[in-house]
Amino acid sequence: MSAKDGMAPIIIKRKKVSGGGGHHGGAWKVAYADFVTAMMAFFLLMWLLNATTEKQRKGLADYFSPSVPLSRISGGGNGAFQGDSMFTEDIQPQSGTGATDINPMDAQKAQGETGVNDAEKAEEDSKYRAIEEQLQGRGGESMVSVEMSRHIITQVTDEGLIIELFETEDVPLFVGDGAEPTPLFRDLVRMVARISGSVTNNIAISGHVQSHPVVLAQNPVWEMSYARANAARTLLDSGGLKSSRIHRVTGHADRTLAVRNPMSVRNNRVEIILLRD
Image (cartoon, rainbow, N blue to C red):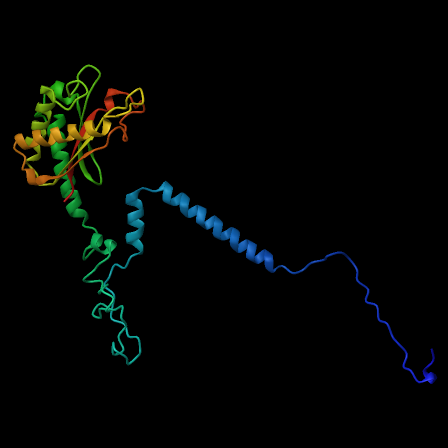
C-alpha cells in the first residue's frame, strides 16, 4: 500500500531477545546471607548457653550491667516531668515500676555498691574449710571415727558447704527400705549438728534414694527420700541445732544420682548443706 492512497504506512518493530531467563538481580542473595548469618549467631548463642555454667552466665550478665548509678538525664520537654526523663532515679512513673534505687535489678543486688564482695566469700570459704578439716581429720584432730569417716564426703560449692552422708554395700544408714535411722546415722547427724554450731548459716537438707529394679504401681522413692531428710532434720534438732536455721527439707527421690548405676546403694544418701549467707 502506498502513501499516495491517503493512508500512513504501518511499521512493525520486533525486539530481539537473546538468552534464557537471565540474571534477575542479586537482592535475594543479600537477604539470604543475612538469614544465614542470623541463624549462625542463634545456634552459636544456644551452644554458649549450654556450654557455660550458671556462675559463668551470671558473671557475663554482671559484666554488661551498669556498675555505676544512672545519672539524671533530661528529655528536653516541658511536660509533666518538667524536662526530666521518666527513667531517671528521682522520677517514678505512675505505672508502679519505680526507680532503680527502690526496685533494683537482680544483677545490681548482686553487685552491691562496689561489686561482688570477694572478701566476704573468701572468709566464708575459710570457715567451710575449717569444718571440712574437722570432719576429715586433716587438722590433726578429728571429731569422727574411722568408721564414720567412710560415710562422709564434703564439697564447697556456690550454694554452700555440702556434707553428704551416704550408705555403703555393707553398712546402711537406715533400717531396710524405711526411714528409721541406724545408730551410725544418728551419730553422724548429731556430730554434724555439733560442728555446725561454729557457724550461723542456714541449713538445707536433701534426701536421695536408689532406683528400684522394677516399675511399681506405687513407687515409694518420693515419700522415702523426704522421710529420710525429715529424719535428719529431727536428729539435728535433738543434736542441739537451732530449728530456726533449717531453711528447707526436700526429697529428690532417685532423680539425682551419685553414681552411674541407678540401683546402687551409693545413691542412698542425705545431704546437709550449710547455705551461704
